[in-house]
Image 1 (cartoon, rainbow, N blue to C red):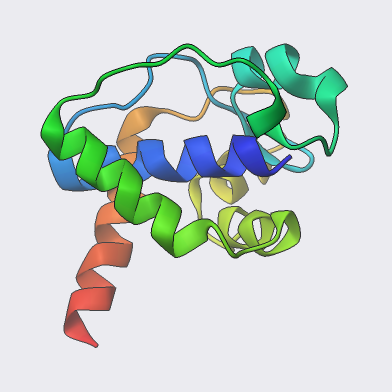
Image 2: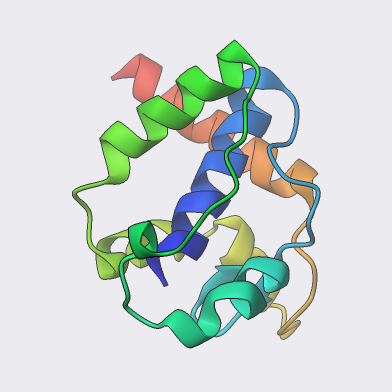
Length: 127
């Protein structure tokens, strides 16, 4: 589900760039990637429907978080669910490290997500 990947990635960028979480929900290592169970259970029956068809609560975010979310959306909006999934399944990534230890459904800590994303930022800045 594309929504899960987008929320997970935005959360990781928020940790790495703003040094604070976007969400407080638990993130777990599942077969198909890192999953936020609360988001999964809220939307799993919607399948591939366009979420713009569903009423959503309007939220105001702090300006730095709004900017981060806008940038994340600009980067990811054209990517397919499979492409996003590939980005969250990278070897040595948080899901891989947790799931690879045989800990299916084990929580992936924010510290691991933050460090992974900080490393990606450092690498991108050196290119």
